[in-house]
Length: 460
Figure (cartoon, rainbow, N blue to C red):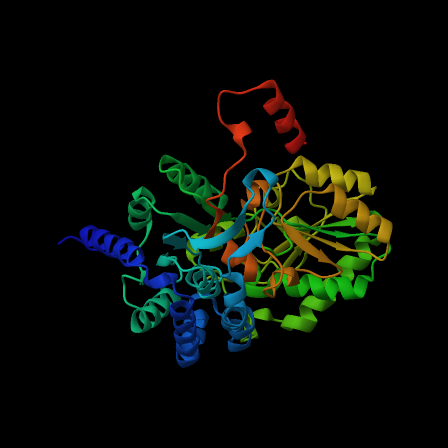
């Protein structure tokens, strides 16, 4: 049996397992989530070690940004799953009386989850938690780039779940193409816009619903009323976390001309304060995922525009936290999502110019604004279209299970986390239960003038 035939057999076994109805039991789902939580605790040291090998993440960053958030999502689901899975009564229209109407959340069935390399544990496990909670079977395909974490995830999942329930499939481009060609009941993809387009195109062949968690050039706006020191501290943290390899990292700063010099000075000081005079000597400073992305990032740095940083270590694939000034939209660094430790700073004259700039380009996954002006904040948040964001902070909107996380337009479609994740992996089935009493005769032919008048009365 070939490798692809084995994968095909796993997918077929998952379809059969779902049809057996086992996953419809909320109790079964709760047991599965508890198993996953305990497994994460057992594997924690291996997970953190793997994250360090793949991306140079410290144990603090690995727990804070991946393991801890994944466990928090499980805890949230265990508390709320019974409520989320309940069928709900809704008002019944006059035309359906006597009777009752309710909405029942049901799982889609066999789900494919494709996760990226930048947060390889969290972005594998968090959607998996939501899919399990909703009652689906799952094929999880982690990234081949984050090989160490992918192996740990595979080992952990195979220890606690049978493959007909949850299976991890590894590999690269060829395996992706195989999975894209299969018919799924739902696809959840996190990754680049380029691959996202391919996922959507292939899903359309089977009319498969999808969630796409993509990215984009997320702006960070700093107006003349902002607390510049606090803004600099929070921007530097968010931008250089995970070496800039975060889909919601500030991609560029767009500041009022009057505060440009101050924000540059403060961010330069914050880089030293947070990472040291030499970031390469900081054991908590990460690395670029692979040589391909490392070379791409080096090509985005204009040495004539460096405020701080710019140095590199070829052996460890590290680039210093780098800030650029005098950047324009014609520069290479502004033509694509950076996804690395490079922060260009641009300026604006008016908020109308900011809105025109943001709205002229692809919809960003996130937008951040630092300001004390409620009117300025209202203007930007109402008139700019983006996935989500923060006022006077960065990236923290993705933490927690009580609000949705997702993109819009080119930055993605659909959302997850908590109830929104449960809903993403559920179909909401409407059911009308009619009694055996006589129904309104006007709906049956032959139609009459009186019947039409009554219909118009009922259907106002």
